Image 1: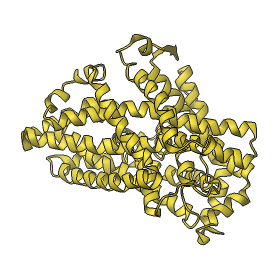
Image 2 (image 1 turned 90 degrees about the vertical axis):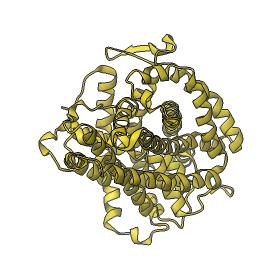
Image 3 (image 1 turned 120 degrees about the vertical axis):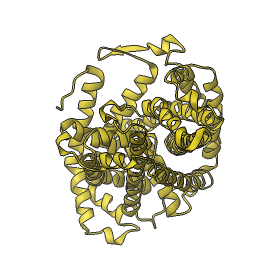
Image 4 (image 1 turned 180 degrees about the vertical axis):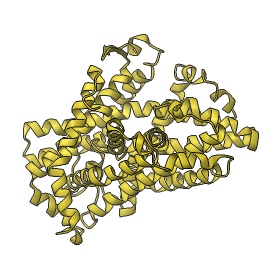
Length: 473
């Protein structure tokens, strides 16, 4: 163990930081819409089962790797595999993946901050115009918003684990919860709101098919920040007196609760605006919902609470999503920062400065790949479609590599690190874990069916994204 390894100051700080990494844009918008379009309560049930049965054991495995080695993902793989070349590659994948995901996540965060600013300054009517989004993302103002967002992220990260990440999480996460609950209470007072609640919660088992099951698993896995190296890195900042299994459960519960509660905000608002809403017409994209659909919903509120009131509600919503995005971005970027500090012995300031140069260049390229610069907009072609630079990052690193990284973690923990060492690490700080049903289940699932499922997801994603065909019905 490194003598000067940074650590979280408390278990609460760790849980809030880890939950902050998991709670993101997908929780705020993507999850509620996915549930509504895929069977409502039936989707919620399947999602919850996947969180418990598949995602929680993977999260436990990632946290255990980090705490045992007190290292970033690359360092963890190297230490426990005696620098085996194959596992070194797995370690590098766990560093490169979050860095590239940070690129596209930062672009969306910049857009959110821009809309937050516009809503707060009284331009809600403009945001509700369906043509605004295309103009906005290709306008020069995004570079000004980019400077502010990058500055906020840098400020949090340069403070380190305890004074930066933990302190920010202890402020932003409670604020996020309070704003979310306040918006839910407000929305539920609107006319016809409970029609949206009914549609969201009541199960429609006839809508369940193989693609819906696959969507629920994908949503659960991606929502909990698995495969990004975040939980390995954050686990390395966790003291051995803290229980890993219990902490993982709290993170999973918090993330799921936020996603579910967000649905109690989004769907009632939509049904209040239009009682005859056809949920099949709702956008499958979180981006589409946030920037083109929901501003119209907020503007429609002016008939009951006035334009200023509608603008205030919209501002709170965008602030809520901005907080969720910032906590996720900070967690994602911390992974390569920790790698440079641990493997190259960089100071935190030097690691941040080095990464910032490359990150800023990549973010600018991605931000200009929506029509501003044609070369990046029409960067390549595959699966019968033209793909932008931004599309490639999402398709390769977010959609494809994450399940592969999760698969590699499972194989490594059970078959390279060995089950006995894995168990011993999890029993440290949690004596009740030894011999428990949860211990037996984690060992069995991580070593058997979870790797098979993640392998199938990986192969099917490759087939869909790069060959235009699905191997699952």
